Image (tube, rainbow, N blue to C red):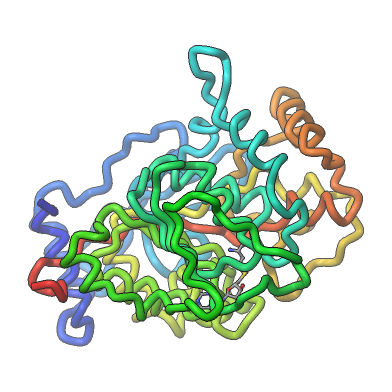
Length: 388
Ligand SMILES: C[S@@+](CC[C@H](N)C(=O)[O-])C[C@H]1O[C@@H](n2cnc3c(N)ncnc32)[C@H](O)[C@@H]1O
């Protein structure tokens, strides 16, 4: 049973013109347990007071800060780095590097899987930072189904399957063959993957959600939607939420005015949370989330200081001159810690990548980063679900 306060928020923001933001915050104040729970003292160093339109109503807003890192994550829209609630993405370093009883880490497991990826370059798809994010999301959520919108050469399908042999996958892409000259698509040999590709293509929003739920073929509460199709991310998130989906990972979470396609430049959660022109959408999305977090890149942009790659106008890549005011603290700090430098060099050399990132292949591997994010959506009030 979802907390009652969740339903208040949904109804309030589903009709944003009929209810002021301050009234919604009033609901938050009146209902119990509305302040975020501070259970990660190592990362959360500050708490600030913010004011709504109604000066009398003050709510506590948490900030997330890190040592020796300029960015501040705010639990509030209108900021270049927004965060909300608790997502496992915030604990990526701990989860990836904690040793098990045999002295092994999840990173050890991932590196072996990454070494054997079907396309080592994956020019039009995920590389190490995003593969780490997707792999972790599947490991942590343990979804019964992953719906992957945007398959291309099947590299992301490969990581989903590697993270969970038992999860069903719907792999969706209108193309019969990979784009970007990527050769043959990797096809999952398991009978747990349904390929909605080429002539069998069905768009994410055109799947028979109602039929599948009614026949109990899928459980939207245990479904993860992975969006990597360069379509309108906001509309797709809001769309799948109506079907009861609770977890979404958005790969192309570009910063404001950046993006490989027009849709990227006008629809990512990061833009909706910061761009003044998207205030209505940003508020709606923020208030219908349990959690929002951007995945940390494995190393900071400064690790590419010897690279001569120019900054990419479209975004999607970190650059050594980045100010880092709008991205989360990286998992490792090889720039500050000898221990982290050793870990980073071990990972890079195991993967056959030059850790100096001087050559283009190495730069493209470690610096490709789009603020890939995890959204945990509020449950839909049962009355609004189509099945009722
Ligand atoms: C960036 S690529 C996906 C890369 C892949 N996820 C990976 O990381 O290896 C984007 C893909 O989205 C596909 N696409 C375009 N329209 C789509 C749609 N309506 N639904 C699903 N995929 C779509 C394109 O054909 C292309 O293959």
